[in-house]
Each structure stands twice: as structure tokens, then as C-alpha cells.
Image 1 (tube, one colour):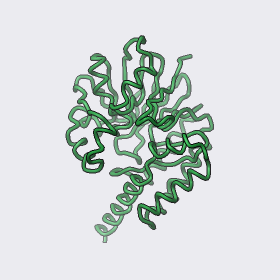
Image 2 (cartoon, helix red, strand yellow):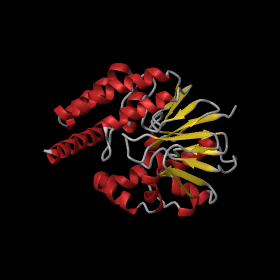
Image 3 (cartoon, helix red, strand yellow):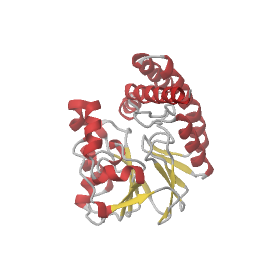
Image 4 (tube, one colour):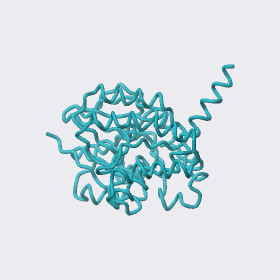
Length: 287
């Protein structure tokens, strides 16, 4: 059976926060941020052959930021991405400019240089494709350019962020950064992943989860609960409540630090606040 390894990229020095998956030697799933690509390569093994394909669940920097840098290293590698994210891989200027308005001077420190991926290396997905034993599905809600992959041989579902964050024994939490959060679409995407009946989930944040049903069921509870919390409180109140959920389930300082890196409570309040504002705009337009 094909070996699948979770490679801790140790983003910003945090352990168990962000991982890339190596599926044999042929495939990498979500290689992580550019600033941590050397750590990922060392964990993969410098003597291993070049992969044939990089599968991206979505184009957020903690998942896909290293893609262009890796194409420089492996010029023949194919990069698979949803059609709504493909143009930002080829020309990341607009995406980076938007992100720098949020992260400011911290952008380079957090994410590094976002290198364009040549058009000829990009394979555009819509969802529904089968790629060398991987089944791809469109799974919006966290991002409009999000896909998940089922590795049919092993029954492993690579879910990016759509199946949530769980670090060690902590809670299943939905990362909800701006600008694309849609709670209803996300719940439908959870149903889609569940319908695959995977043997295990491969979470970018962090690692394999064999308790598939428990992970998905808990996420179904926390997503609307946190959405309602964001509607009724400010950033500080939301962040305090989210941290209370984390601290109630784990006292491991490494896990708590990893949640701060992988989940980012204040950023998640902003994404949910935007979700509610967009709903209000639609309601006003329909009157």
C-alpha cells in the first residue's frame, strides 16, 4: 500500500500547526508556506526523487504558498488547483497585495515570497475529476477555490481546511478567515466528505484523524456556534471564547501554541463578521 507521510513544516517554529502530505514519492498535497519550504523539503528527504504532482486544496498561503518555489526546483511538476484559484497561482500580485493590507509589515515574515507558477504547470480543476487514483470534489465554504481529494487506495481524504482544525486532543474548530466564508456551503461540503466514507482524514492542521465521524460531527456543531458568537460579540470577546474552547480540551502548551498559529482567533472573527455583513446586504437587496 502507498505510504502517506505527514510532514510538519514547523511554520514560524510552531510544531503540529501546519503539515504537508507526501503520498509516496509522486505526490505532495498542500506543500505549505514558502517561508517554510526548506523545512518541508528536509522532512520529505532531500534524496527522494522529484514528485510528479502537487495537489492544492486551496490557494491560502499556509497551504499553497510554496507551490511556485517548488516548481522552480522541479520544473516538470504539475500543480492541480480549482479554477477559481488558478489565476492567482499564475499571477499572485493581486492576492499578495490584498493580503498585505491585512498582514502589513508581517507578511514577508509570515509567508515569504509568493513565486508565480507558470501557466504550463497548472492543471485546472472544477471538481469531479479523477487524477491517478485521487478523486477531487469541489468543497466551498472555507474558500470559494477549495477542493478536497480522496485517495481511493488508502481511503484517505485530504481535506485542507473544510474538515476543520484539530491538534492533538483539542477541539475541532473551523478556520474562518476572510473573505469567502459561507456557513451553509461549508456544512454541505462536510456532508460531501462524509459521503465518501473515508477511512481517515488528513488535516493540514494537523495530522491524520481516524475518528472521522467524530471530527465531522463536532465540526458541524462548532461552525454554526462560532458563527453565532461572532455575530453577537466583538473580536476580543470572540477570541477569548475560542481560546476557552481550546484550553478546556487541552493543557498541552505545544498544542495551544499550534492552535494560535493554525487557527488565529482574531482573523476568524473577521471572516465571520464579513459573512454576516454579506448576508445582511443580500437581505436588503431582496426587499
